[in-house]
Structure formats: C-alpha cells, structure tokens
Length: 120
Image (cartoon, helix red, strand yellow):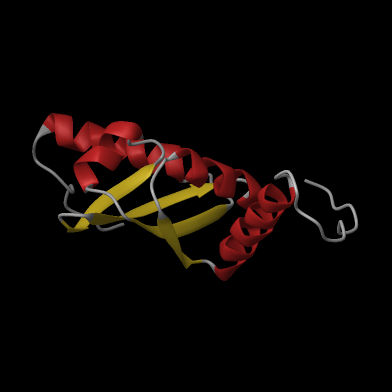
C-alpha cells in the first residue's frame, strides 16, 4: 500500500484525530446538525468522542455526530440546550418531529388521538 501523510504533525493533535476516528467509526447512523450557538460553547458541552464541531458564524456551528439509534440521537440533541436544525439525514428529522409531537401531547390540556404504539 501507499502510506498516506499523517493528518497532523503535533503528537497531541494526532492523538485527538485518532481518538475521534475510533469513537465515531462504529456508529450505525451519522448526522449533520446546525446548532444555533457558538462553536466554543457547543464544544465545551460535548466531548470529541461525540462529534466534530465546526464554526459557521459567531452564533452558529455545525455538529457532525452519530449514534447507533436515530431515536437516541434525537433525544441527545435536545439535551444540548440550544435550538438546532437537522441538515441530514432526513430520517433523523422524522425522529425529532415524532419526539416533539410526543412531548407536545404530554402537556396538560392537550387533546388529540394517541398514535398506535411503536417500538422505541
């Protein structure tokens, strides 16, 4: 094989790169989400094993993340504490919408039919 150049010369940066690749390599689902918060704040909230945060502006960033379950990812995105937009995959947007509707139905005074049971 032809060796590829290392992504970083600094040993600490190289170790961080390897740790991220090992942590994220086994995810079944990958997602890209715009978070409406500064990249530094989002990076403080999550570890490098959760995903990669890239600044878009002073008030928003992109989070590349993943999970073995889209439903679990939808819940964890809610834990971030900031508004966000699902950019990909569309199936994650479906999970976020279903979770939002379930939470809406949980509020006192809400009416509407309860959908058929589905597995979590």
